[in-house]
Length: 224
Image 1 (tube, rainbow, N blue to C red):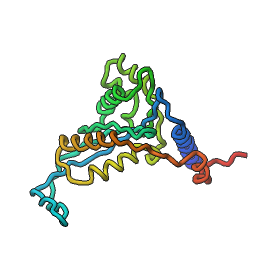
Image 2: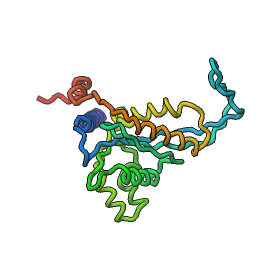
Image 3: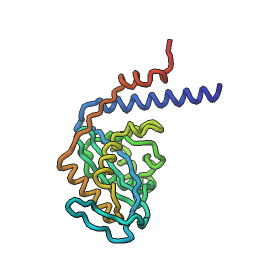
Image 4: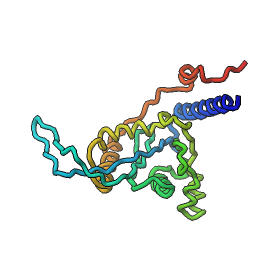
């Protein structure tokens, strides 16, 4: 009975958080409260043991099967669904300090004067205002906390974060090859972001609360 109750409680919590995110995605663009979605993508730094043979007409790039693993890094990424604008950084890790410093730079560049950023993100333990207090002076940390209205996706529901859509495009267009160093990866990612921002593509989210209630009907509690 206890296990059944816990599963039921987790399901209802999931449905509640899902509908909150879906309702948020239906709202029109608000210049003083722009919606952004944030996510992170770990990357391996892969180098060649031999110089690849360059592409020729009718022949693809040819690489040796062996490679050098030069460590890992992480792409920190935010996208504004209504406009398609992006912001990214490449960092060695995704610690509380990395998250806080990313948000400081992101806020400085994209938060409207006197406005608030509505932020959708997952509930990783570093994705909280506590990270601000670990890195910045209390005055700055508190001010930063006021500049974000944060909404968390449910656990095991990363598909509800629209940043994943844009990260998938970034991965296919930019990261699906060997990149040997953090510096090279940073250059490639920021170049892609710059080009993307020159020709932004808004995200047209189609999954609504109404569709969710139909698709997940059997998970909703029966209320008499």
